[in-house]
Amino acid sequence: MSTHNDPTEEVPAFPPVPARSLMPAWYPDMLASVADKVSTGRVRAVAAVNQELVATYWAVGKEILERQGLEGWGTKVIDRLAADLRERFPDSRGFSPRNFVYMRQFAYAWPDFPITQQAVAQLPWGHNIALLEKLSDTQTRLWYATAAVEHGWSRNVLVHQIETRLHERSGQAVSNFKAVLPAADSDLLQQTMKDPYVFDFVAMTDRHNERELETQLVDHVEKLLLELGQGFAFVGRQVRLVVGGDEFIADVLFYNFRLRSFVVVELKAGKFDPGFLGQLGMYMAAVDDLMAHPDDKPTIGLLLCKTKNNVVAEYALRGYSAPIGVAEWKTQIVESLPEEFKSSLPSIELLEEELGDG
Image: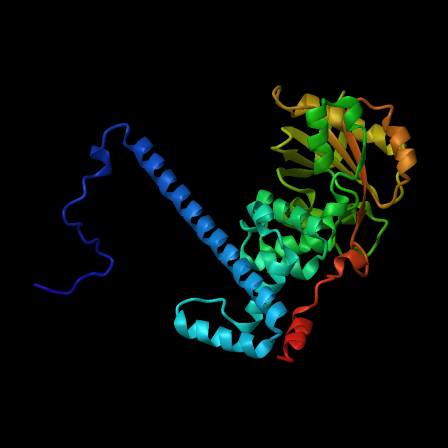
């Protein structure tokens, strides 16, 4: 008889585990409930560990700031401190000299850390470093920290949103939302809209070709959804709408789960023209009748033009009772960031050089 064990053969559990088929009818619900509690507990445990880590780094940075101010030492002490802590805690990471400089910068940037702890401490350390490196204004940092926590941004997404100045663009579209929607819906929808929208993943060969723009946006639908914001789901492009026997084509159609409504997006390669609104309004009405569920809220229109005159857009929107936003689109935000984005804090290299005299 062969004694060879087949590695793919299932080894019976000991003691034997009862078959799932023998479990009571309520067992699947119990399993799902317990598994959910375990998953939730793990997430909370990771979050708690991260918050404690960030708070510890702030406390270390604060002590470095205070002692350096009193005693005037530099990088020699930092280097020695880093080496001794690595020796004392060999299984821990984060004790490089450069990371101690980040801790110092973190404490300098957030002197009232307990006040802002709710947002900042929920972010991983790498996110906090990005906030330090990319921004100088405390309120702007806090805006991005809060948004990153709310939307669950990765570090790369956070950096992208900072570099495209999301805080300046959010809620800036010209719209008629206040005039046609209840206050709560109007405020949420207005904050959802941006101006301009930045499609920096688009490389158009013909900037007057709307179909090429549409194709590239859909080809990069994940990046497009990121730029549109939270809650958007792609429904289709060149969406066929049959009205009174005539066929019409909407450029791109989305559904927003936060707003509970369809969003028709029309793309224009040129300057805003009031006549564009009539076409968009008809598409919105058709989507309301042909596609929307009775529980959905009214379809929203978003007209994206290469340029626009805000005053003309505001006047044009007064004649419409359906919610429409008008914004510009760009393939890059600008060649260089404004002064407010150039951190007034010393760079890491300058800090290390400054500390090098000790």
